Length: 261
Image (cartoon, rainbow, N blue to C red; front, top):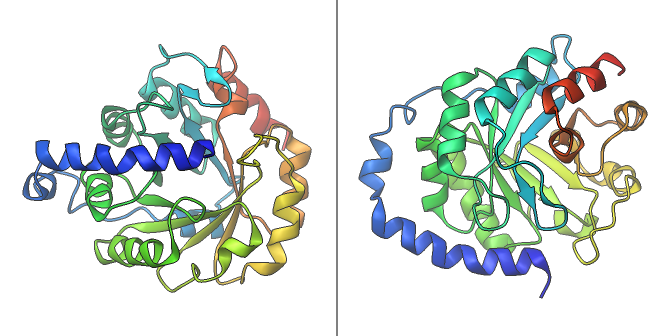
């Protein structure tokens, strides 16, 4: 069992516990539930001078351990936006990434850019949570769930006004998962079995992703020349977390990075 399978397996129990604590009716009463969606797709397709960086806030990861659990999500993400980030991603998974709903809510209250809830979606309830906590986009990982469930969740997300990001690790994962309910397709450059990273995963995948979907590259991006290379090959967005969060000063790191693109 790889780490993704282990995480996903635990999500089913976590969702049941959440359902027992907070009802759907309570989620729907959130002040964010009727907010208009800030489109990630539009922001990436019409960058308005920005570079397509989707800057991620996370305190730790299974492969790299703890970055800095004391970082303030509001301080870091508002700094990201001021530095020129096109959008933000916030981890809400607690056990493996040190995230929480409180992080997402705090960031939503502080910024006005597209906001991705980064978690492992296995149930419609989580999508309602995402809406209630202020997210604009949800993540659907093809390697984590089967196509029937993925398509069902994508359709549900669109029905309540959220955008959808389909994440693939292999080109074969596009089969059965591309539909009118997907807005953005992300290619994760990390091998789930050994955590090695290869940017060529994105390059090899691009020709298989129809241009009707906005394409982004995820993981292992730490150099400005990599962003330029990916842009030349058709990518509009670049999900970056560890390149900034592993430094003592994530905001300074993104400012320096964007200044050299």
